[in-house]
Each structure stands twice: as C-alpha cells, then as structure tokens.
Image (tube, rainbow, N blue to C red; front, top):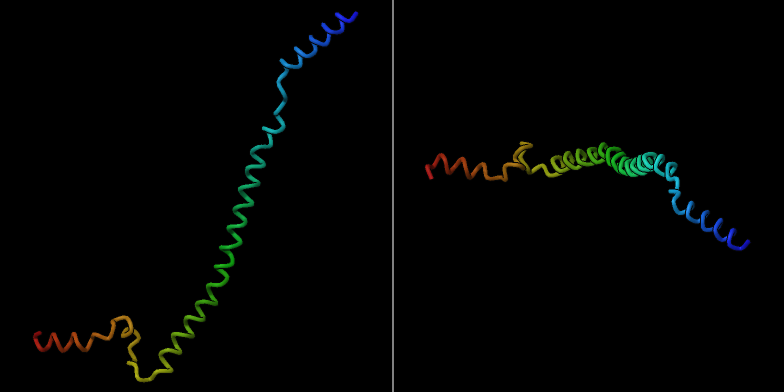
Length: 101
C-alpha cells in the first residue's frame, strides 16, 4: 500500500513540475503599469514647467520696472536706449573716423 501512495505522489510531483505557471495576468497588465508610471513622471515634469510659465509674466514686469527705473533715475545718461548696448565707444569711433586715424 505504501508503494502505491509513493508512486501516486511521485506522479503528482512529476505532473506539477511539467506544468508552467500562468503569468498571463501579470503580462497582460504590464503595458498598463508602464503607461501609468510614464504618466506619473510626465505629470511631475508638467508641474515644474507650469510653474515656470506662471512666473514668466511676473519676471517680465520686474525687468520692465528695473529698466524704466534705470533710465529715469540717472538723468545724466543719454536718451538713447541702445547706447548701453554699444558700449559707449560711439564718440571715440566717430572722432577716429573723422580724424582719419
């Protein structure tokens, strides 16, 4: 009787070893989990970009106020707005061209 039980148990173990586990449910939802993880990362990036774009108008207002203040507070500067970009060498260049040097 013991031999029959051992043979039956050995047969069950052999069949269990031959059976492959069903991973269909794990594989089937892989794309869903991957897309959810990508969407979560994308939402974090959107959070930072949305804050930067919300700050742009405020920073532009600050730049405009500083620009207007810098030209109105110091009246000794020229009225030309582009003189700051030229470097102040305009007079030197004009006299050097006219003098032939």
